[in-house]
Structures are given as C-alpha cells and as structure tokens.
Length: 239
Image 1 (cartoon, rainbow, N blue to C red):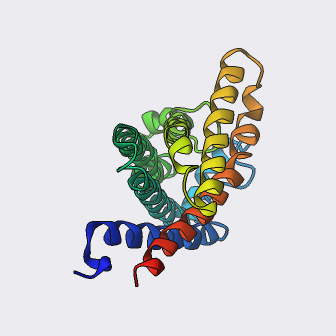
Image 2: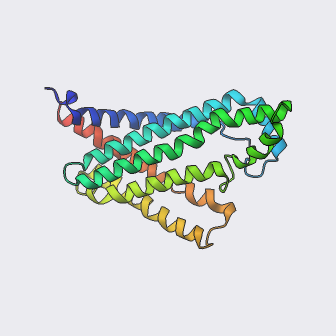
C-alpha cells in the first residue's frame, strides 16, 4: 500500500493542505472587513448603517473566518497526530482540546453570519422585534473585547493555548521544523496563560485586551508554517 493511502499519509496530506488553506484564508481576510471601521468606538447607529451597506461583504468575511478556523484546527489535529505514538494520552487530550475550540469558535462566527445581519435589518427597518434587536446587537459586538461575542473567541484561543502546552514538549523531540513549531506553540500557550492571569488581576485594561492578545498571532503563524514543512517532509520522505 502506498504511503499516501495509509492513515499516516492521509493525516499528513490533510495537514499540509490545511496549512495552505489557512494561509490563503489569512490573506483573503485582509480584503474582507469584519466590522465597521473603528469598530471599538463606532456608534451604534453607524454600525447598523454599515451593516446594511456592507451586508454581503460582512457575511463573506466571516465565512472566510470559519474556513480559516476549521483549517487551523485541522493543522493542530494533525500536529497532535505527530505525537500520537510516543505520547498517546497527550495526543488524545490535545485532540479533545482542538475539538472543544471548534465548538467555541463556531458559535460566534455563525452568529456573525446569521444573527448580526438580521439584527441590523430589524433595527434599520423597524420590523417586529427591533427593540430587542437594538439591545442584542451591542452584546454581539464583534470588536468590543468584553462582549458576549468576543468572549467565545477568546475562549477558543485559550483552548489553543492549552493545546500548545500539551504538544510543545513531545514535538520538540522531532525535526528542526517540529522544534520551531514546538517553540512557537509552547510560547503561545505559556504567554497566553500569563496574560489571562494579568487580565483577571487587573494588569490589563479592557481597552487593551485586543492589542495584547492579538499580538500573539505571529507565534501561531510561525507554528502553522513550520507545521507545513513538517507535513510536507513526511510526505516527501515516503514518495
């Protein structure tokens, strides 16, 4: 049986293509607005008007985010597979954490596609239920870091941080690319936990949450690219 048809081969091929999709969707996200310009400080009325004028682009942007999330979760799941033989329990726990992160992420992203545009329509057109919609839209604000919406997103990233802590050690024993991925994931996992503690203890102001936490994104990018080289290396070595 060819290596590509074995379970290992399928996992590494899936991981490699997931890396490519993450990168492509990341580039695409630069051209798709996810909220009204100046979203954090934008007035409620401005957000409603912007949603009406940019409904299709807004939905497309969040569909792209769902694609990115699923593909990144695929990269992480295949990364857990890398350590499955040597550290089976850790790999199982890491895979469970990735699965939980998908649940945490898909809830707000689906609300962005389904609920938020409908709330904007109801408010703009003063249809039945527009008063409730006017109260719900601020709760689902995609830019305010302490809204109900963003709480799910930060939960998902916290689960990614747990994943990084689980796999970093075992991954470090592999190739140079695995070592780079391990360092990036381990650093992301550790720093994220420290920042969570700082936030809960009052060391990070609410207005600074996004700057601090999204500042860790480069570590995930490094881990993704390194994982791509790992998966590609496994595939090429068995051709």
